[in-house]
Image 1: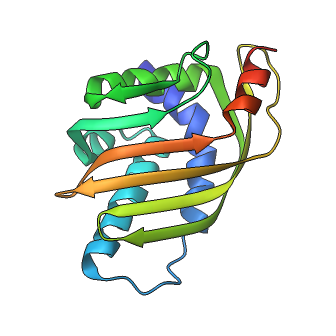
Image 2: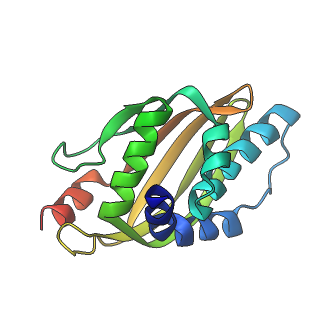
Length: 163
């Protein structure tokens, strides 16, 4: 499957680093721990190209939201599994992650927040973005991810993409 290959190539290294940096220094209640485990499992499935697990962890009505320059093909919101899978293929074809480092991972109830540093190259221009910070807010309901809200330095990404 082409999506699997593209997805694996673009995020495998990043996800491996994410999972390696996932440390549970905080004491979590059962709900928070289950939410954290679900979000990390979804990240792991993306990184390994495990489409069956990825799809199983996504709610049918999941929303993947990231804002930025509408000229960049992976900016959305992306609503539902089919749109999100389309987005992941587009992202994988247009962005190569070269650095991914989580600095903080927090979970409370149905919400996980991940903060970190990353870098990448946009294949459209071949330009490196430069180190920038990111934040993720994810929500889980009934063991499935319902929201993936991504925040990044969209100006730097746009500058690199547009060359």
